[in-house]
Image (cartoon, rainbow, N blue to C red):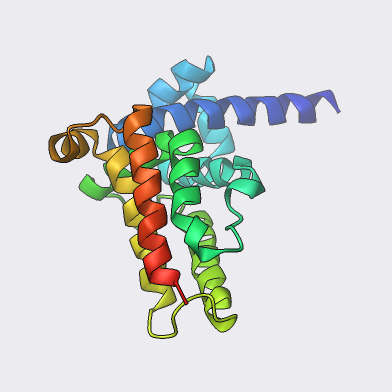
Length: 197
């Protein structure tokens, strides 16, 4: 029993260190040596648990996705509240991960080396939620649920991830409460217009 607990503890240390390394430096910039150093273990031990960097990033993203509380992934019943809700969740819980997604946008990453399956499940659940709301008559029939989901993602991620652009356009720092309150209000107004009956 002790060996199993030690193995679980070691695997957890590796995943915690890998998350820090990948989310700070992206896939290409992350180094197995640095992950081992962060975890305070021998580099060879990482290869005992994971075949390589690609398997490790997939396990890291899957572990991160599993750690996000389900209430942060469950969309509000009223579609008017979705954008504001997602903005708050992104701001409060997902900033590290969002920075990783910016790295992957500029890096050349091997196929299926970014936790794609874990992420796709979450994103497709948003699309399915929008389809369900459309069937209930809460979302206009002429709007594509997948494109609505993409729009919501853009509106709730971009201002946080591209701080300098947000400040250049609005004159406000997206990390300050003044901007966040204004943006949440704006998201609510836009959503009311899209989803009004």
